[in-house]
Image (cartoon, rainbow, N blue to C red; front, side, top):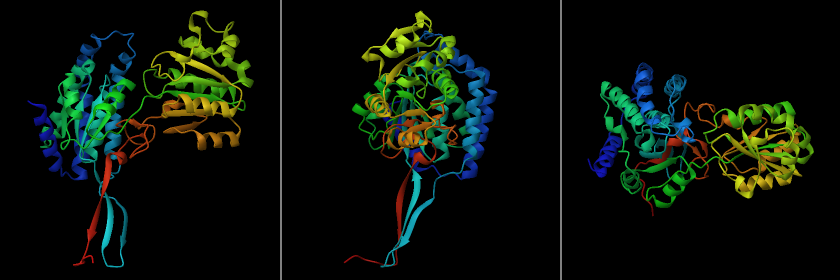
Length: 414
C-alpha cells in the first residue's frame, strides 16, 4: 500500500467519524478489557523488541512493558472513557446588533499524525485520546518498538471491528524511516503532527514537516533548593524527581543549590548515592561532596553537563549565590518543560511561579507529576513546551480546535 493510500483512508475515516459519546465510551471500555486479557501476548511481543536493544540504552526502560505498566495503561483507558467529552461545547456566543447569532464551538483537530520513538504506551495513549475527541490518528512509531506497536494496533483494530467502526481511525505506518518523511509531507490529508521523543527527533520534525507541528520538547529539568527550603522535603523531592523513572522527560537533570545550603548537600544526596546516581558537580558542590559521596559516582562538571537531558542515572549540580542567579541559570539552560523550587519563603515561591518560563512550574513538589494522568487528564498525547495552541500535558481539550457558527435571517452586508 502506498503512503498516500494510508493518508487518504485516514482522511475519509475522519470525514465519516460520527459516533455518539456513549458508543465511544463503550468501545474504550471494551478496549481496556481486551488489552488486559492480552497482557501475556503484549509482553511476549514486547520482549522481541527488548531482545534487540542493549539494556544499557536509556530507551530500554521506555520500551519495556510490564504487567504493572499494562495495568496502568488499562486504567488510563478507563479514566479517559469516564471524562467529559470536550466536543460541541459552546465556548462563546453573542447576538450582533444586525441580528446575526455568532457562536464559537469546539471541534476535533481532524487527522492527527504522531511520530514517536521507543514508547509503545504512546500507541495506546494517542489512539484513546484521539478517539474520545473524534480525531483520527496516523501513527509512526520507532523501529525499536515494531513488534510491540503491531501487537497494540492489532488489539485496537480487533475492538474497532467488533464495534463496526472503520479501522482507519487508527493507522500504524510501516516501521521504515521513509514513512515518517511521507507523513511530514502529507499536506491536505493530515491536519497536525505531534512529535514525541528525543530532541533530535523533535528538531527534525520541526525542520522538515510541511504539516503544522505541535512541538513536544525535551525535558531539561531543574530543581532549585532555596536557602529557605526544608532539608527533608528537598531530600525526598530531589530523590523522587531523579530516580522514580530516569528515562522520562520529567526526570530531574540539574539540582541548583543556594550556597548557604551547601553544608546540607551531603545529607541531601545520601539517597542518591544508595541508588547509584552519578553526579557531575560544579567546583563548590564537588568540594562539599568529595569526602561524602562515592568517588566512583562523583565527577567534576564541565559546561557540557548543564542544559542536557540525561535520561539516565546521572545529574548535575549547580551552586548559586542568589535567587536571581537561580532564575538566570534556569532561563539559560531550561527546555521550558518542568521547573521546581523548594522553599518556605512565600515571597520567593511566588516570584518563582511568576518569573520562570516553563510549561509546568512547581513549588515544593516533585517534577515527576508532569504527566497527563497526574493532572487529571486521563492520559496525554505529549507535553508541549511551546506556547501556540497548547502547553504542558496535552489531554482531550488540547486535541480540539473550534469553528464559528453564524445563524442569520437574510442579513447582507453593505
